[in-house]
Length: 364
Ligand SMILES: Cc1cc2nc3c(=O)[nH]c(=O)nc-3n(C[C@H](O)[C@H](O)[C@H](O)COP(=O)(O)OP(=O)(O)OC[C@H]3O[C@@H](n4cnc5c(N)ncnc54)[C@H](O)[C@@H]3O)c2cc1C
Image 1 (cartoon, rainbow, N blue to C red):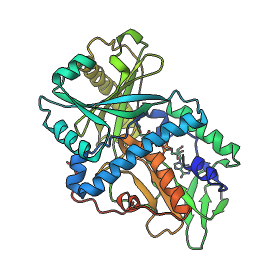
Image 2: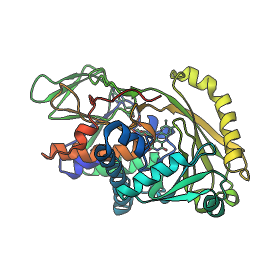
Image 3: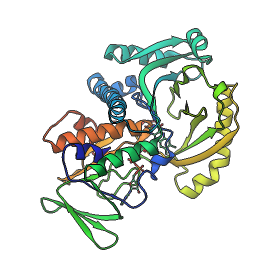
Image 4: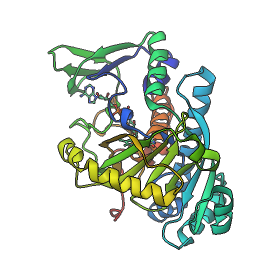
């Protein structure tokens, strides 16, 4: 997304990736393109005040819509489908959802409240309540990445397979040292290295975790009405969507202790069992016949906001770290904000999302 944005602005771009692009966390992504942030608006407002919280939510909403319209405008073939999203109450208490609805309404965000009866009638889901929102989408994240990459390369970006191991920011340009011993000099560098954060960044708010996901076999007749994206009002939520070919894709069971790939793999069998059990409670008529299961690093931040902007003490190095359940939406926002900085613009969001921002307290 950053390369697409910067080539669109007429910049000469060199993309460095040590693997095939899209095979980082992107290939593991369930790609629910939500503007609703993991941290509910009312909690974010308690943390930072209404004005900043609302600015972040509106920016996220703007990014989700921007991503949808960019894909449509360029005809990127990535199975993107505009979707409704359902944010379900957990337990028997709709209070959290109702608080959230009150604040979203005040902010003019496109969500409506469904009580138990309305939710059951329209979606067949038995929970205490839910927020139903417009302007979400789903997509194939690998196809999306390749579509953006192809566009960037057609606009004369270059793609190098190389491992960046050092960043020298002493001069007015940046020198990126590669493992091969070669180096690249550039006026600006944007770090879009996913959850692999180079040492120069040192953020305070990164929260490592792992997430697991399953995709069922095709079951077009068994999908919930309107195939909305589904997630929940809890810190460690489950998330579910359908796919264009009629599967259910469901993720969650996040774990902050199992970070190493080997430990993650070892836990997969139990996590898949738990995801299947959850599917049965969410949507009993679905078949839980699993065709694929996988896991990946799924880092977030303590306030669920991305880390975007200038790397502290590095004048010409920028970071585009999406993180959390909105990683893809936030990546679009990162591309937009970094593109704007390089064009001489500024935004209060750059303070809100700064890598070295103060995050009051830590979330449980
Ligand atoms: C299971 C799971 C489910 C998810 N679900 C969702 C979801 O539903 N919705 C959503 O919005 N987000 C979701 N996410 C998050 C989202 O997928 C990520 O935020 C997003 O894909 C990150 O893209 P990226 O390009 O920044 O990082 P990546 O895809 O990780 O790409 C980073 C690239 O940087 C390269 N790299 C790293 N270090 C170096 C180096 N030193 N030198 C050269 N190259 C380097 C890597 O090779 C890699 O190709 C999910 C993630 C996971 C794991």
